[in-house]
Length: 366
Image 1: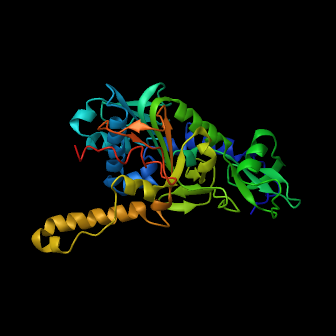
Image 2: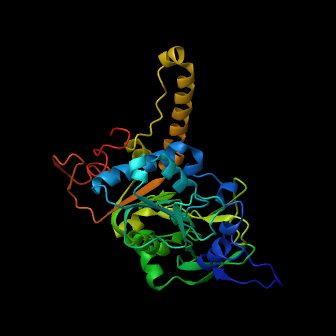
Image 3: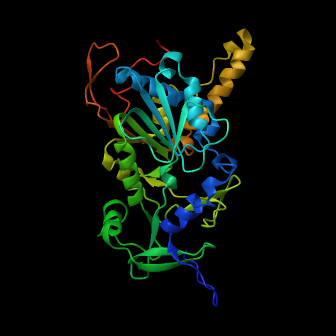
């Protein structure tokens, strides 16, 4: 619902994209706060070390697919305080780690005590070969919001610093084109108050990130929706102190909206679920056999804890429903396996891992 303006007050009215940019990344922005994102919400990285282990496994498989280059990049987009890149480095076998050049891409300053092997950057490095991984980055690329008025016209939603909203001018130009192509088809009737997040800035940001790779794989893991399942009233929301809250662009909270990953996939690539992707990388929630409890109780407890963590990362209705956009860069549709004995077909049945990475032995098998 659109809030009304209180009489007699003076407010600064802006689109949500401009307001969120300042609230998240400005001098006093949310992502520059000393506690970091982990002080307010938990991502898959924080949920379990199994997530970083799976990313490390993916990096090893990609390394083999690329022919084990002399320098292998791992680029952690929206690195927070470096939790994922640090855990990935720690999980690599020595032979791979010796060739890895690790980058953390984050607008906030470099945290104290970070591994000296990690290069801290505000923008992704250009011309590298390896894996670019963006966990919950695109949902924090600010976007404008559109809302339909009583005549069904899509108008820009303007917001004040206290979160109060009002409708602005009709959406025009490239933003209007994006809405028609990806969210509101021209022939579709829309009720008053229908909302959409205009994802064009995310499409462009992802295309730029993909273009930073010379050869390798770019992966975006995020809250997502695709055509036919767009939320009728949008997804813009806030998070603070572990709770979902009203989005207010004052720097006190995260401001986020789910990502139209199929639109971002215009840069190439395939969309799948986190559940499918992590299972392809060996993360499964199967309980250990009860016989292990009698033969090795400690191992049983560890395996049970691991199964619970894997189940959380892959759970329907939760983290497992996250979208993974997987974009190969400079890789042929047919690549030789690590053994060099056969051509492998490109992705099959919509699974981007099929034939590209799954059949390549990972470091646990070598």
